Length: 314
Image (cartoon, rainbow, N blue to C red; front, side, top):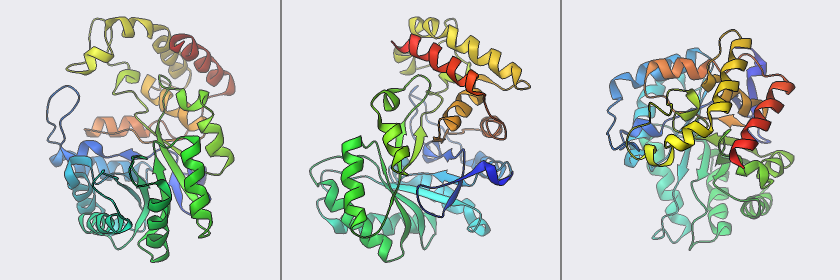
């Protein structure tokens, strides 16, 4: 993997791969189709393969499987610490009412990950009642004490990002990232101006759910609905509506030596300047996701995908 496959995390000197790996599924949590995934036996293979294919950015959270995802990731890092960039998140539950709650949660995440320092520590949501200012002050203290290398947020609006930036700036700390839901089928971050604001501010956009629960991989069709709760949201009518988009994804993929619709969807986000973090529940998915790197959609292809996506969404 050449140096062009890595980007700076915000205004920091931390280099991350253009594609990361989301590890929510590593917590063995209940999925949207009502089943429980027990993927522990395959986690090491997923991790190792992702690393070998050029992915160095792994995202988790204390919430994922009540810490199980962090523990699984920690068990796999071993001697790779200098090769990998680890991100996790703090959840501002309504009963966490003071800055010391963040420090305590951070220490617990460090223990589960078996690390002395976390590369990117993120606020999971901008939930009340504690104001953003208070949490950013706590983040600043953790940064100054060397427990974290960079500060990020997740699901923050333009206004909320601005507040976080202002507080961190008083401590000469840049806000490194904003992790948001962003995909060809969820473009509200673009239309709201959030993506543009972050990019102009030097804040990396990390895109979660970049494949829309597998919908953009093409594995589901009007005659093959997703199981469980996903069938309610991604129903037959919806899957019929996105057929034109799926056809374009397939056509563009063929022009790039047989890239899959999922790989094209991830590359679209990368060209947009975002860092997508798809999950992988097995080795096949891990390898396919990594195939989104090492090539680039043309501006004409991006415009074509933008156009068909906008027509479907509106």
